[in-house]
Length: 118
Image (cartoon, rainbow, N blue to C red; front, side, top):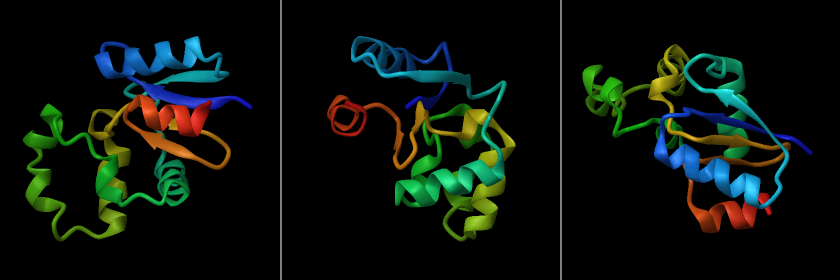
């Protein structure tokens, strides 16, 4: 099974995750998260599949997140509003975003990848 691997090539964490996938021979399709961000519909499916709260999908350390003042805006935002923000700019998404048939991982932690993608 091929997983979707949404990444930003200049991101160090994404490079580590890609290296892990390569070393463990995980079949993946690399998707540039800024050039081809997931649509609102795709994001909703990913979030539902992951069982994680919407806020976990935000790149909270990103420049764009700070510029938009999302830390304060998200406190009262609806799920629909959060989806709108996430779908509006690939740089707002925490990366890498790895999506399989039944599972989704956000970011890269080796032990999480071991449990999910091995």
